[in-house]
Amino acid sequence: YGFMAGYFANKGTDLNIARNYNQPISGLRPYPRLSASSPIDPGMTLGNITVYDSDGNSSYNALWLTAQKRFAKGLQFNGSYTWSKSIDENSRNVQGVVIQNSYNIRGDRGLSDFDARNRFVLSAVYDLPFKGNRFVEGWEFSLIEQVQSGNPINFHTTNTSLTGLGTVRPSVLGPVVTGYTPARNGNAAFVTYIENPTDFFNQGNAFGNLGRNVVIGPGFSNLDFAMVKDTKISDRFTWELRADAFDLFNQANFGQPNATFGSTTFGLISGTRFPPGDSGSSRQLQVAMKLKF
Image (tube, rainbow, N blue to C red; front, side):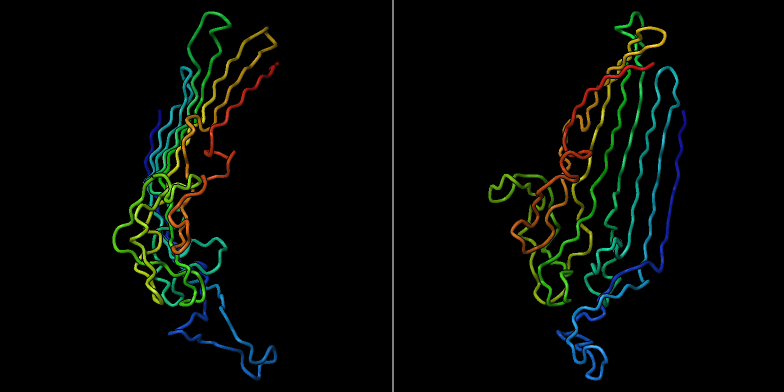
C-alpha cells in the first residue's frame, strides 16, 4: 500500500489577455476614426480595437491526496482526490475579448473557467479468487470512477452598446439559486438550472453587480466497468470473453446552462457535458471475444 499527500501551488504573471482599446467612454470611442491624413483609408470610422496585452495574472492552489495498492492477492487500485482553487482574470483560450471592462482588468478577477473545486478518481482491477474448474476460474473485473464538481458560469447580457462587445454581466437582487427541475414553460427539451431567473435584471447602460464566475455549473460523475472471463482451452490457447459498460449507471451529466440574460432559454440546460456517445454522456455496452495464444 502507498499513500501520499501534497500541496501544489502556481503563480502566473504577465499572462496574455485580450482587451478592447477602443471601448466607449461615456458613449464615445477614444479613437473614433482614422486621421484625414492617414495613408490608409483616411477618415475611416473605427470600431473595436482588440489588443493582446501581457497584463493577466493567475494563481492555483491544491491539496492532492493519493492512495495506491500494487497488484497482490489479485487486487490493485489507485485513487486520488484533489481539492483545488484556480483564480485569474481571463482563462485564455483564443476566444477574444471576454473581460467585462477593458479599463478594469481587476474587475474580472475570479474563478478560472476550468476551476473544479473537488475531483476524485478511482481505478481498480480485481482477479476473483474462485478456483475449481474452467467455468469458475479466470474471472476479473475492473472499474474507473470519476466524480468532479462543476465549472463556473460567466453570465452576460445582450447589451453591446456599453463596451462595443457582449461582455457586460447582469445584476442580481440576491443569491443565485441553482438546481434541476423540469424546464420552464413545459419545454421537455430543456432542464432548468437557474431557479430564480426573475432575480436577474438588466441594469441598462452600466456594468452589472454580478461577479465573474461566481455561480458553479453542473458536476460530473461517471463509472466505467468491465468484466472479463478467461477460459484456458489448452496450454497454448485461452478464450477471452469481455463485457464493457461505459457510464454504467447512465448518470445525467449536464452541460452548462444558457448564460445570456435576455435569451428565451436563459438558465436552461439543453445538452450533456459531452456530445452523445462520448464519455459520460450515455450508457454504452459492448461485448467482445478473442482467442489468445
